[in-house]
Length: 357
Image (cartoon, rainbow, N blue to C red; front, side, top):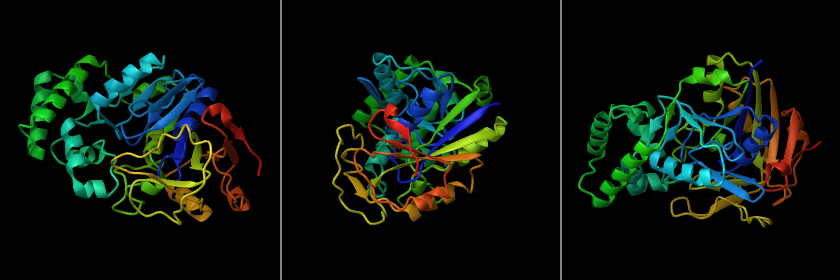
């Protein structure tokens, strides 16, 4: 029987979806990892011995050797993809990437617009062009993965129309970026596959993006992401593939975080240790990583929101960063809501252990 394992963040992102996905890859080495939301803004860190990689344009099984698949709900940026592919090759990761024909393509025009939009930046943008890409594709100026493998003249015409959409012409720096974008498209071996391709795998690991509290329909607007960060998309794909054996891994750090602007409950600076492997550091768009003590009612609310869409037979809670911060929690409140519990005590998936509460 085909199986699906869905990884969902219960916060504002940065919960530990990368290490959890890698953990599931160790248990299911013949699986494929599927991204079902978000895109190149992900920063999912996996560390295996002396090898470490931050997965953005590839799924978090790539460093361990598993193939990646980006669904129609994702965005891809050929320039970022090309750069990460070279990095993964050096680390002996799996650079096999298949992409749904309707995955949305981010262009240099989208990134430029994103980074020059003060209103968008104030909302907590990561500056990777995700929101601009999604918004543009709601109108007639669409660009899909299937367009990257068609006639170059048609791709050029679509890029020209997108430049017209944004009113971005005669900018030397941008022209250079577009030229490099086209070089990357030509150099990449992009495999366009619809969902029937996934039937060749017995186990599918669905890797989520961001967290439920950033969901476009359930987060606190306007500081949300342009995606369904619940299991909604993953469940829809499972239904298309007739997969009923579904297990969800809900992820949280042992403390709450938020990278970017927006509402956060009981924000305070916590005294953390063992943060040398922290990926979510200061950047010019999202600034510092914000922290707070974990709030169980809010955590369970995020799970309740996900359950609107989810059809899992089993739910597991994974609490990461227990080596950084030991929370004081009423564990009895969690027992009624999860079937199993795991804790992470380090940067590698081997540090994830089953715990009894």
